[in-house]
Image 1: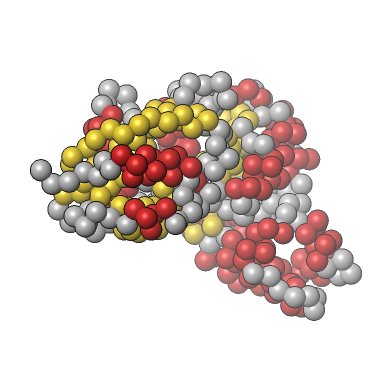
Image 2: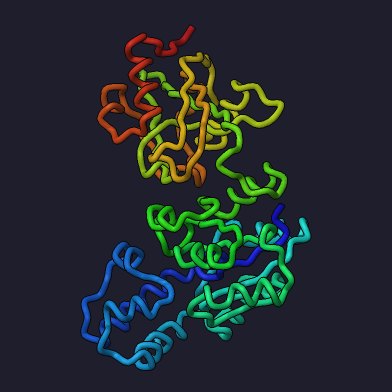
Length: 355
């Protein structure tokens, strides 16, 4: 059971990526080196950041690089904002009486200003700041605060955060809210990966504050091909499935029927109301490389028809949507379960129609 959480700061609780990206490009400009796009920066940036400097500006003294960085970032430090759900997650930690700490490379003066601006100054028992290589500090934190390793979790957004947790012999949760990409985080092999803190909060609540492990039971989910009056289907694109297109849906909650779960999930994810629900097939999806973390899903797949307005309002689980014909849907970069469902429906001509 998790009783202690050590947080990274940047990219985990606050969004300072825009400022750090611009400050880093300012360094490169001063050093006469080509600047980076944001995608290039996320792919190349690392902690300890001396490794990044060694690769891009090997001939410039570290003191000069730091002077350039802080001359720029110091002007935008106050513009850093809290990440979505960060305050909600810290309130959850307080309600669960979890001991909370911060271990971060951020300078103490930056942390003080930012924490005050986002209302997090009093959320932590102790803070460990200005730590370039967090692996060198994690054992001290564990010993100084008498933390049980089995009950301690480090939450961060970079490979270095996961490596720090490994070094300390504690659990880790990698978030997709900051500097590193999903592929980079997977390489570090964290205990758990979550899109954001609100998702991770739900995971902890659902599992009694115990981190899910690879031997837990399969997860039952529902999803549907939704048809409009023209016979078009709704496709949504989500980062959870490696940016591929698929169908709306989600987990079945306890004491909820599968059809009730389908209605709820579609309403939450798209704002649509559905009718004429018909079961098509079930699929086992076991540790798919397309999904952002290892998981065994039992997918209950349906077709249905939208009632009333077809205006879609997405929540934060999907990034785009399209109403398309079935043949056009097959031309999209679909995740494998959705392609199997669509092929099955088209082969059996099971499009729901008005009664």
